[in-house]
Image (cartoon, rainbow over all chains, first blue to last red; front, side):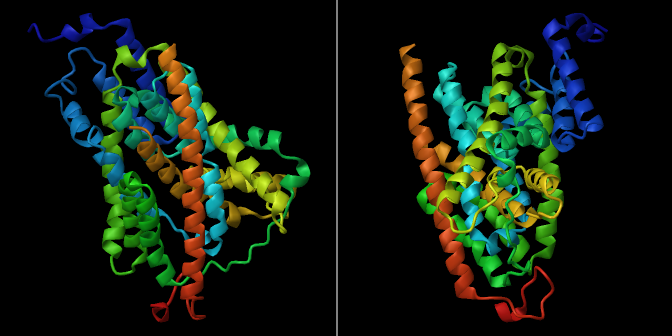
Length: 367
Length: 57
């Protein structure tokens, strides 16, 4: 009998707050549709992990075991990359490879936020884990954070996934602040036809893996498995494996990743002023990304004979397809006949490559 | 405080090298992709949008 009701009398106020936070995350996932695939498991995991004497966590708790096996080893985020790679269609990027540059420029938020976090007193590895929120790519954030700052995984994951959902709110004011109406109305001719030879699509993932891997070998796990997933998709002879990677593999790992991270959101580490700072800097990272992308596009316009709509730069972040949609909607708002969605999607998928390249470089530069 | 100053200096180094490295890799990828695209050529005309054909291989 003594085991029964013991939790009811052992609750601390911190654990009660964590249960409320878990509830809020579930609410945001269900009612507001903010990245429900991750926020709902994280929210429920936070509840499971913060019930006093919970058997779900602890030395023999299944969720702690999963954390050690899948998150601490970086296995889960890497497996998700295979699924993401199998979902990405690089056709629009292959038609217009110049968009790669915007996928790189919009990673400015990653590196600028590392400086900001360091200035605010975080050590370099913690700062790098915070900065990587700017990759706008959950698995990359988790991959880097599990190596550099596993104790911050909870707030980092919540920040990364929440802000990805908030891209339509975060980006437009920043873009408007940095561009004139005339610039937002710049037209871009779409010359592609949505057709790229199958051989090009097949060789592309191998090429990307080789180039990124040779320059920054520590990015090979990230880039390589993303591109492996893409090769499954494009080779044309592994339809079943491609579908499995896109659906079953990605879904199962996402489910386990979310609940595992949530269950390890311990009240004593999550409920601290540092969490608020991390959430604030996550927002700053997305703002810096947008600033970097837009200013880079404006800089290109100083020299380019054919002007680029600078909003395309903002679509270079990895949040796909939200960012491309935001930019396209803004262009249509200024001029209902100005369609730049194709170019924006090209920059947006380049951002998916750019974010993992940036993640690999962060791993290479900080030891 | 001194440790923090070192950390900030290191962070600036990561910013400069990280951004330069990211842009360099993306430029190389853009160039390599253009070369690849030109080497392989255009798809044959009988394919559906977004698809290649057997001839492409």
